[in-house]
Image (cartoon, rainbow, N blue to C red; front, top):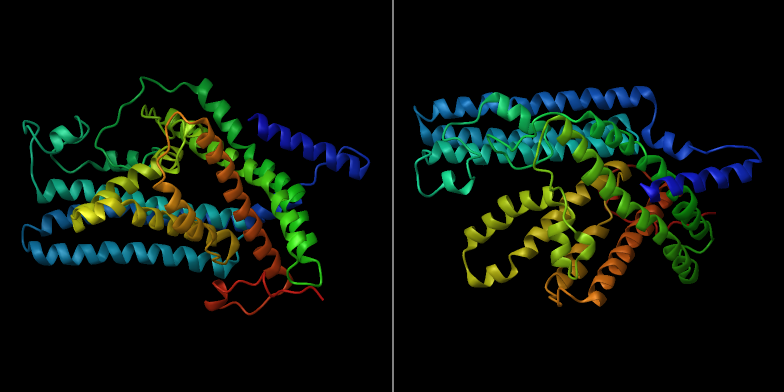
Length: 415
């Protein structure tokens, strides 16, 4: 919160001095959200996606009944139907964003929401399909009765449980969750207020830090000048630091706690003490527990059980890191309209190598190293994505599938 307020006050002071009167330039902020009509269309699309994910429940119940007639045909048909639904939903989101040329913020929200619906619907199907395929009861001494510590029932969860699951801040389905006795509105309103601050703060940092640096670099006749690029990169570190901390504060703290309080959701361990980490493997586990728990349950464990070899157990974390990077690339495509695999390269090379480095947990040096490395890594993303975005603005080309992957910042020249 302190960092957010400080950046807003800095922007107010700087804009007022330049304008000669009290003034704040919210142009970048307003352009990021777009017009009211575009926002309404994005909200309408969200309702369509929400309706689609609700239909997963009746489809699942229909599958359960049809298995009594023909298990093999029912399994194959509904598995294909579920896969088709996921592909169609993501295709619809991509098409909707491109055809309507949605602004960055609504585009980002839609891509994140559809990814969230995918992860939630998959968790619901996985957890309840086990009940259908492997019946059990509460008196079992092994199995789900013990695994879930009373959070799961032998029968398929009710529609009310599914609806509650779709809105609570967790990606792992359970029939029951720990609940608080009542909603404390004195906690809801402060978190609701704090959710409003990061967006103008992000735009202020971008407008004052990264964009001037990149435009100064890209505005030269030479397509690449190492000295200017180095200066631009280090200027982006401020926004990188701002982006890293405020993303965690906005999503993992304020947003998640707000919905948890309103829905009386008691399990609020959305992140752990990642700032004390001395290794990247610890950081990956603690930074975002919502995503980490889902990936661990449905990707890490499943792939390990599938290959079931000592060699794969040693490298089991590598595929999960790559899949996580691909998820991030998909989300970042929405606001930028291009794929520059910066995250994939960072995760696949440096992230993988450093993942297997196991220093002492009490080493202060490695804790400093983690923070410096994270700051440099986020700054590299800010630098590369902003440069590519500005290059595509300076050197427009015909939109095509191949141009989505072809970098333009290396050969774009301002004439």
